[in-house]
Length: 138
View: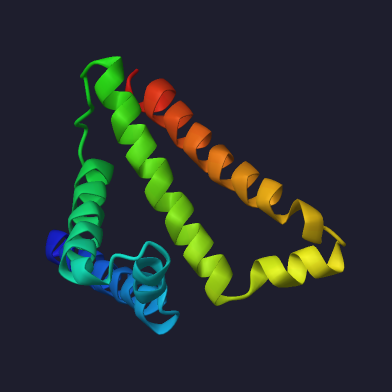
C-alpha cells in the first residue's frame, strides 16, 4: 500500500510541475516570442517537439544513474546547445516581461545594453559548458 501511495503522489507531483511548466511557457508567450525573435515561425512544430523532447529527456536523466561517457567534443556540443536554449528562453522571458528596458533605464545603462546582453548570453553558455564538462563528464 505504501508503494502505491508513493506512485500516486509522485505522479500527481509530476502532473502539477508539468502543468506549471506548460503554463509558464504558454501564458507568458515564451515559445511564440522565441519564434518571432529567431524569425522561424515556419518551424512551430519543431520548436514545440524540441521543448517536449528536451523536457522528457531531461526528466529521464534526472531520475536515472545514466551519464554521458562520450568525447569532450560531443559534450561541448551538448553544453553549447543547452546554453543556447537556456539563453534564448531567458532572453525571451526577459523581453516578454520588459526586464531589460526597465533595468537599463533605472541603472542608466542604455549605451551598454548590447554589452549587458552579450555578457548574459556568454555567461549562460560558459556556465552550461562548465556543467557538462565538469559535472556530467565525471
